[in-house]
Image (cartoon, rainbow, N blue to C red; front, side, top):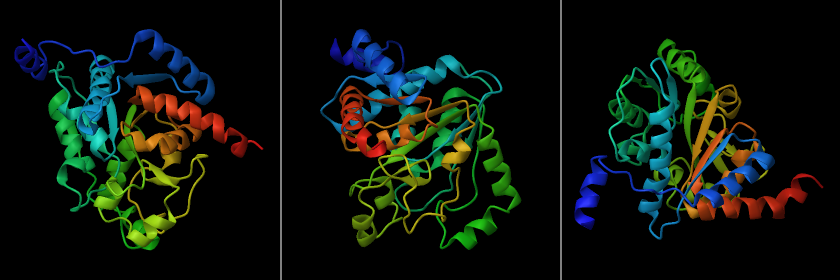
Length: 283
């Protein structure tokens, strides 16, 4: 029976409930709405394995998109394993005309699957519609080169479509050895040790208070900034790893996040961390 359920789940015949207890999830959502001004919180049940946790969180976002995306919708697509996992969620949504535009450039390091353009193509295949690639590297040598690339017509066109999106799918990065930024070679080991207390939301580095954090990478990333995410109607942050409570809190404190998808334990950890650091933010 378990084998048949697994097969049915994989092709979308049945839906396995990965959402946390409704009452618990609602109570947490209310707290997050009051503290951070977000619209909704998706909490997946806790899983012992990292990959399983990532897939459960992604499944909640995938289901939400299947219910809310309509013909003519536009989605700005970030990079990373949490965003990528949405395309792997079970089920086959009804096709619709949706634009998935890359919100950051690409990299040959770290694996194709975590690049925004690859994710955008897979999401377009899942939900219907089309994808648009940002033909630029994710990171360049210096701010001068970045400024030049931002004047390129192709780059400007794709980023403009991402800015005007209805929804943004954004990962947040911590600076552990397994993070996307480390695997893609954005930072050297020395730079990692100096920037350990920071993280990223989309393409910007910030601290736990949601304030910009200067790193050697700052001003070199080709993609949407936090300020450019702000006007997007539904900025969805997806973070499943237990190491990310600090950067989740920093992202929430920027005020640009509308929807958070994470695990039950992460949600609780973020609230505890907010309690312990709120006096630092408001002495």
